[in-house]
Amino acid sequence: MKYFFLVAGLLFSGLVQAQTTREPLFTSFDGTKIHYDILGTGKPVVLLHGFISTSESWKRAEVRQALADAGFKVVMLDLRGNGLSDKPHTAEAYRDNAELKDVIALMQHLGLKNYDVVGYSRGAILAAKLLTMDKQVHKAVMGGISVDFSDPNWYRRKNFHEALIKPGSHPELQAAVDYAKKSGADTVALARMQEFQPVTSRAELGKINVPVLVVNGDKDTDNGDPQTLVDAIPGSRLVMVPGDHGGAMRTPEFAKAVVAFLTK
Image (tube, rainbow, N blue to C red; front, side, top):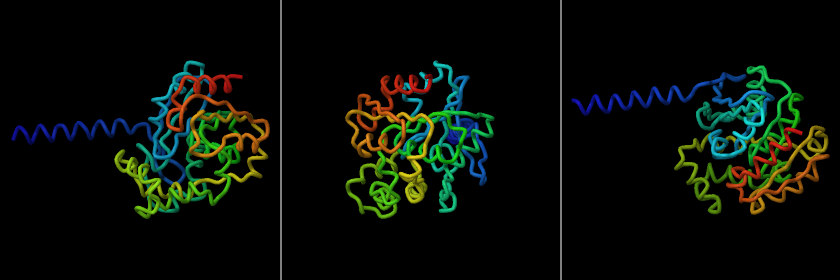
């Protein structure tokens, strides 16, 4: 009996802790609940995490604290389908740039205008589209990406989608799929994210008129040549930092480049 109450107590404690760590939650435009955190005070900047990831990835990177120390209010969210946010499975929940509508709605909910955005990997893909949707974005940093996402038939998007819905279809991506499952990610939601990943055309990229910094690891070739993105966005520039795709965003050099760009 004592064992039963001990286990029950632990389960209840874990449930309470889980409920507590889910706060704060923001109810987005379609009822989806989005988890977010805020660090610091000052000029707002929103951080967009990558694929098979959550906002926790920013907490392991120096750039989060560096921005707060530099006088920024840092907003981090678990994009729908990830982390502590709701994970709907329907196509409707992801089509028509729903993830970006969440970001815009959250910033409006918080009363934050004229904000900057930092996106890494898939987060950079979202940042690019956000620039075409919200005139409140003041500056943008895109890390770990090339211009290839401007192609709606980009092979990496299509292959990841197929790998998630057809086991064994892409052996080269199996390690990533296995990691997603091991980490507890919702693979149905991940597949929807790839199915309806936002596309920003080269024509749209060519019309961006806010300052953009592209940052890439010197050993990162995962998503193509970052110079192609710089060539597509007028006035943008490229900074190379140490590291591969998984490590570059966590380096002090990445943090230094982002802070220097956003504080100019």
